[in-house]
Image (cartoon, rainbow, N blue to C red; front, top):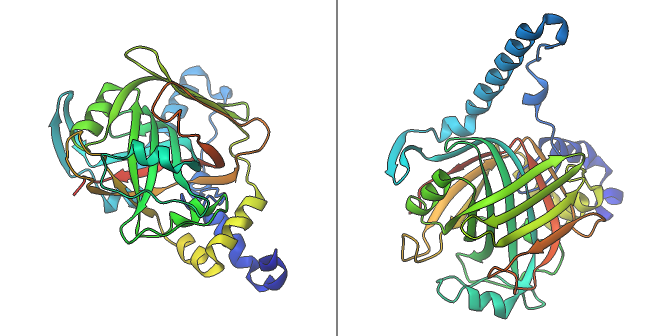
Length: 340
């Protein structure tokens, strides 16, 4: 509120920030790539064959544009690796997709027991809770082929960890800190290729799933089960995920400060450090660099009507997860480099 009333001179800059957006700042952005270049109309008056040809040509052009984004020019597919499912290009690219990041807190003692084999110290709030996030995505175009992904993250810092504020959006503000690292503890994919790549090359604890992820009628629904035995992992529903909450975005600006908000909104993409769990391929929590850019980002508080989240019989069901916010992402672009 103070920012709005005390600094009206910054409103044009704030508008620019909201339009440009970032994957970690969750400001709504309508990508100019979706508006320009102009798309030809493919209507039925062209005839069935011509219309189908027009749609196919347009889809191919859009896919080529996504793959030529400067993020992928900076980190191109310049290698290959032989894994159990065949030879695949490296590094890991996501060209398009949508999904949500659900952030919140869990019981600290339970999180510490779960992470007892890791070398990290999980970050905690002043109230003695630990930070956790769930990432649920439908990658519609990727270097490994289309696939779904569910991840559970815990957070640590490469410097001495200090307690984090109790604001529901404190985790989002924290993710702008270059010293913060994300431990990818749990991972499910619905294709054997994605599971093999994540386990054998990235040392992530990937498991094969049967999953349903759909964004239709203004609601994002999802259901993830273990492929081997049908055990429920996670299910939920997010209402109006693309709706931007002005209250949540202003609260986030207050958390960050205007200067930091402006600086990060101008970045072409966001870099995040991801740690693998021990015992999959590597015996240490190695750091992998990742980079992400979205066409659309929106954030709102989780406690809006219609939002539901239910854990199955997994190690995370006993953590007393309290979801606080939802970030919706669309036009997802992502690069994940090898751990070092």
